[in-house]
Length: 347
Ligand SMILES: C=CC1=C(C)c2cc3[nH]c(cc4nc(cc5[nH]c(cc1n2)c(C)c5CCC(=O)O)C(CCC(=O)O)=C4C)c(C)c3C=C
Ligand SMILES: [Fe+2]
Ligand SMILES: [Fe+2]
Image (cartoon, rainbow, N blue to C red):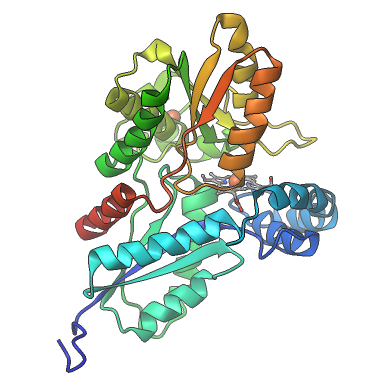
């Protein structure tokens, strides 16, 4: 300890989420989408095509439509993804105590990863643990955060010890927390079925990450093992199996599906089945009450609150469904704060 009571050796923690626009106005949404959709790990086209196609055509067309949806999401505290991230940072800092310095950054827009890393450098931490807030590794999410961190730290004269938590698909604290939130909803009323809806990615991204060709988008993902540890599809199946086990669900009581596909004229297939197609078939099968989880996200955002909580609910009711309920995300729930602190201490 120094004279101010600060421990002389402190560990830096960098929590990172994806990013969000500064405001729900079209120019800010355009700036955000321009940064996001020109990332080569998100849109894996040659840069010479990606930049003119997305900055010149896709983003200008998409930004006003996305801005309308962001306006529905926006709160007095701004974007939920941002304020939940800041709440989590403060609570994890309190849980870990003065031996740690916890910073928070976004991969796209603000607060930037660069600023967050500078805070850790200023605090003279002896090592840095990076936790991208994506339970299942994907090159487009976790991989992109890792690349950005390495790009920034790689330019520092003194490069500290640094480690990454690349996946927490099967982390017992993560699973227990989501299962507890699900059980709380199940205690309120009966549900016929549970949907685990994950953010989709193009099938091509899964195949590119396949270890020695192990993953072929078939039964390969039905068990989680050393060959598919970082396969996004296998991780989504594993999280679902563990959540189902924790909540006492039999395999026929739940479905795993994928949402948020970016429609393109190239019609490249994304991971299937698509959540919107699956849920429209539920009522005809006698499934009238559905509890929906979005376990690819640890904070509520556009893709949970609006897409699953509102758009899917509307589609389900139009198809003859009676009750659709989204399980809220982990946000800065006390159990989740404890689970994050435990992951950091173990890292
Ligand atoms: C869970 C991790 C995520 C993966 C994997 C991911 C892949 C991915 N996303 C797009 C395109 C869009 N995603 C958008 C929003 C969005 N995506 C994630 C997370 C993952 N994306 C989050 C947390 C959010 C919400 C941000 C918020 O502010 O609330 C959007 C923007 C919204 C819209 O215009 O619809 C796009 C676009 C691709 C193409 C992709 C993989 C290739
Ligand atoms: Fe996304
Ligand atoms: Fe796989």
